[in-house]
Length: 393
Image (cartoon, rainbow, N blue to C red; front, side, top):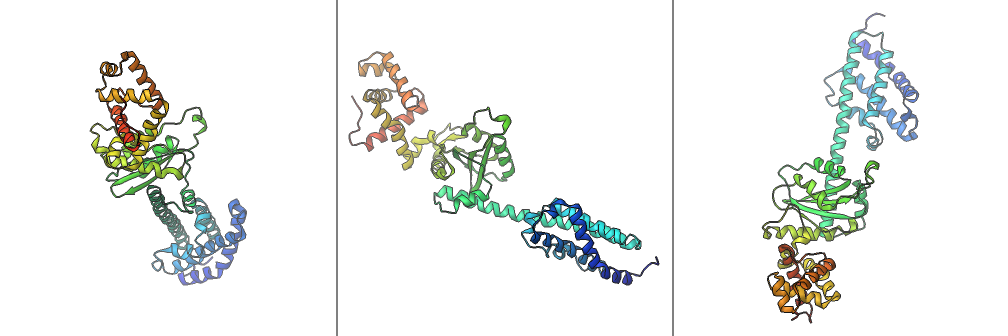
């Protein structure tokens, strides 16, 4: 075949454009199962992309400098939702089939046309990757804003009817118990590391930055099959594994709550504990918000006061006045068994037995210095709140 001039080649390509589009759609139907299985509307949209690619190549061949951003020409013909239904891999398959059809039809053309097809196919592949990267980036920014909104709703406790759908849109996999972890945001936040660590611990997380604070809502997920025999990790251990992702300073874990919709209570406790953690000189990292109940109560946290009364003062008062009196005496006498025994006119072993019973009833051990402070705070606050409450002689 005689070699054509560039204008002749261009005119020839324009006469072939309809034939190339038809052949491309038939080849797509013959070779790509995912294309055959598409609804008619989406098949049509994919076909438009293929036809736009051929038309754009002809325009680009006429003047390679006229279209610096070819993605707008090709992918602008498709509806926006096509990006959500066709993967990048499938798009590259579409490009390959289209290029194969064009190459086969022009195989007898001059070398410059074949080189132009190779160059254009490379550019269109890079353009496709760029389109999907931009879409992923936009999706990531949208997810980040939505996640920040959900975390803010949890912190403020201002829920609305849309919260469950927002949580579902984020792909939250947690179920059952939830706990909220509050610490200082690092200079560079590695969100991917935090999520990866959580996944390895059979957990899911929602992450939000509130000023200088980093807030993570932790929920357990169904374990993988190979780990089903293991007991779920305590939230405190999960928090310890997430600790490297926080900045310097205190790290406080709120108490466990039954579900995500109850997470506001855990968040309030964690935030209140974080605000006063500096008052505990040897506070571990992370520390439980319930271990900061005295400091929180002194700072005016009503949740801490009600927790001290409900979990310590009332159970002892309802269980046995004898145990409550023994605890008062033991703490007032500087945790001395002998002094307490003398005041109560009992044997020191009796005091020791009662202290053990107190620990069984409320879960705190009065013989430890830190727990003694918690218990004494509970007795003081409980007696203030109780009109009949007073230290027993």
